[in-house]
Length: 136
Image (cartoon, rainbow, N blue to C red; front, side, top):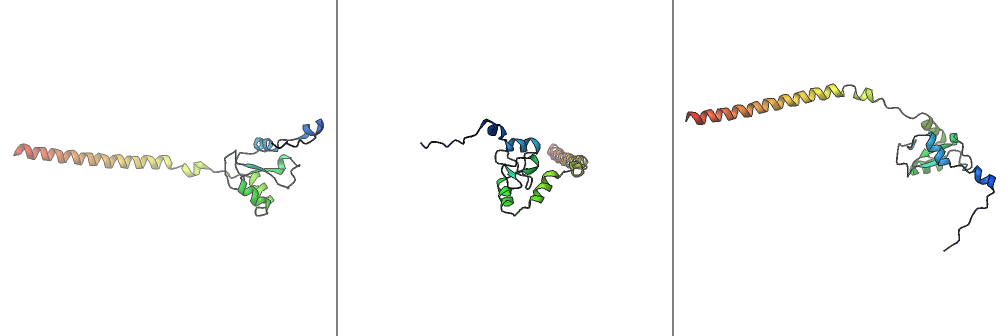
């Protein structure tokens, strides 16, 4: 078994260590700011300026591994990440769902009406068959 190398840190250095992942997840929602991926255990925290010792909350962004790599190689601009992080999209579900209740009620009424007429037809057919049998 290989011995592990321990970093010699003074007491003041160890107190300066910051858990930047914890900071980022306290400040920002646990989803990738670029694509919306949301499994917290897989998400990564990116240092936007590339300096891992700069743990200021404004320098951090939560990204999925793919988006993080694309940011690191320059396919996603830092400005884009910052803009998406600071201005998350807001979906107004009331606009999308405003007629859902009424439409569902109309659809349900039509279904019940069709079912009622179908059952009435079946009952009428049975009655005719029974009357025909009684007349013979």
